[in-house]
Amino acid sequence: MKILNNLVSGYFDFAEIQAMRHHPMYMSDFVDHLDKVLASTGEALLTDAGKISHRQAMEKANQEYQKFQVQNLSPVEEAYLQTIKAIGKTAKTNAGK
Image (cartoon, rainbow, N blue to C red; front, side, top):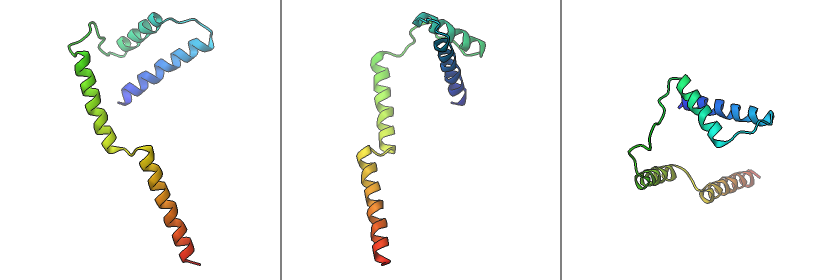
């Protein structure tokens, strides 16, 4: 994961530098640059569409998102817990008076 983060960071740095230089870039330019970066770091390049269908990819994405949702609180749940904590602090403060 660290390698991926570094590659993405470097890619964004490149894009930012091109923007600061006002150098027009097209999507094909970014694809070419990304291929060069990946090749120079020894990563394998995709040469075809692969073997996974759109339907299979969407099913997998939905399954993984369901797992993620189970492990994380919704904004409403988070707000509820913050409210409970605040009420608890207020009750302790008032009990000490």
